[in-house]
View 1: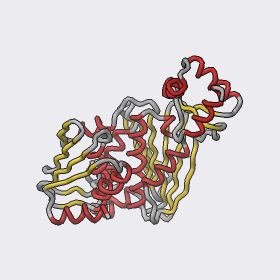
View 2: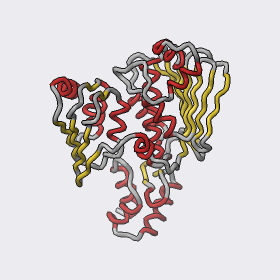
View 3: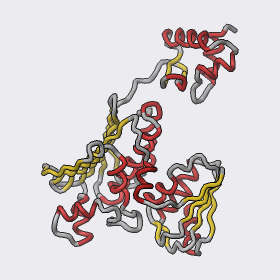
View 4: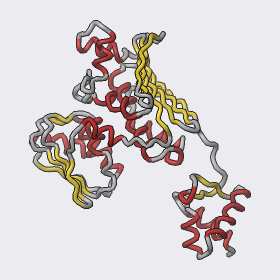
Length: 335
């Protein structure tokens, strides 16, 4: 079997693609020779390349048509933001188009804003649009429900739209305390490059690149439309955004991280869980201390002990100092 055939067979057998470096190691030939054969196979349509530089991987067959624009319409009832995110991630090949910082921010912002529409809007449908160009990724999430401003006005008994808008961005205002901390919009608006929300005849834009804000009248009266724009190669780290507005709740020790939750009385939302889990993917053991925590929400427990646990099945998630009520909620989420 000649070297070209061997390369093709190895690539066909690989599940996640092979780098030129891996082929060089397996076959014992120079990198220059391997790359020349790979280029020939690409020109013949036998394989295709994804990515750039030394991290590029080679896959069998011709490349599928690249998707830089995706429109989805989903029934709100029973919709899962994490499932939709994974659909977008795979169909648009986000791992190959965004750097790690941008993908992490997109994950957080997209799932938070979609979750808001699912839990708050009362809309029958949710419209989702994701666009990628040479510098940015942008997403739009739209519903035709009650509207974010109107929801705040009714819940907090506020008559003024501007005052309700101010409440929306305070960071702890929510109309569903059992599911949310109210931090989703607050942190998302600070993590992305541009955040825009249109509702109740108003459009409020936060431009973090220019440190500028703009409020104007728009035609949209019903529902809510949220637009977020993120640079594909952003240097901003979402952990830095969280750290700027929250304290240090972690104690690190080699492959074990101890997460001290004792200063919290209530931990209710997926937003809080995602913030606590951010940056912990490299650790093998996560140990949660629930001392002094009197109440935890289903969303908080589900995000850590089911969603995160299923995503990283090799990790050990342990907890201690939990009250009977907290322990019940944790174990319930594990079933």
